[in-house]
Image (tube, rainbow, N blue to C red; front, side, top):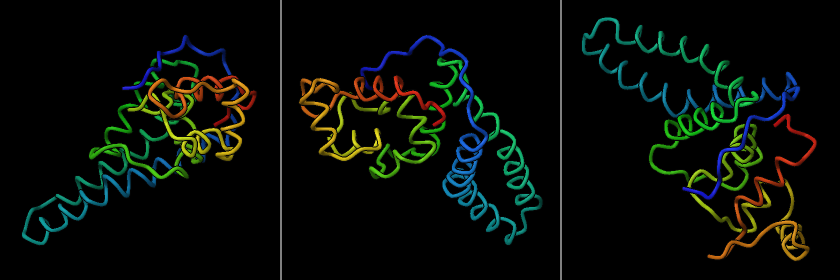
Length: 177
């Protein structure tokens, strides 16, 4: 677990429709790829063997997921910090059951930015300069410059403190992502 403590609820911030839509789209894609497609493959095989209604069950889950994704996106982007953190942890546990191993570019996605702002890194107290840069949308060298100037904190075990990355993200004037 990381060194991030839940923050009090943020003041109401106007989130753009584009930010909400982008997050919904990414969640739909990741849930389809990671959860629904494997279920469909599993139950379609059952249908071929004579199981009645198995693919209907997957379609019902798909319809429910489409509605829930809208709600989850609103919760992740909304002012209730505790709810957003809980939803983020649940989604990451479902989408990455074998461990949270994502490429640095993932942090620039809508979900990556929400996770960075709400949790920092879900399982690490420190990250490499490359990952910190991806979380912040800057280069590795810019991270080094921020470390040198004391704008980001070094973690005692090495790397960049996730808490300082998260604090920097949450102090930005562009909270739409």
